[in-house]
Image (tube, rainbow, N blue to C red; front, top):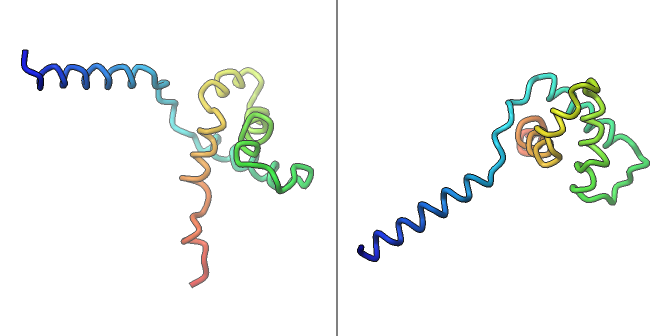
Length: 108
C-alpha cells in the first residue's frame, strides 16, 4: 500500500463521520412559518420590558423569539415544530430571508 492511498482512506473516513453527526434537513419554511416568525419577532422587539441590553442569544433563544414562535402554533404541533425549528434556525431564516438587508433599505 502506498502512502498516498492510506491518506485518502483517512480523509474519506473523516468526511463520513462528520456527515453522520449532522441533523437531518428540516422541511422548508412555509409562508405561515414566516408569518409566525415575523409576529414573534415584532412581539419581542416591541416589548420594552425586554430591554435593549440583551444579547442575540438571549433575544432568539428559548426565553424569547423561539418561545413565542412555538406558542403561536396549535398545541398538538408544538413538539414537532420545536424539534424542527430551534432558535438558530429561526435567527438564520429571519436574517437571510425575511429581514430587509441594510444595503436595500438605505435612501439613494
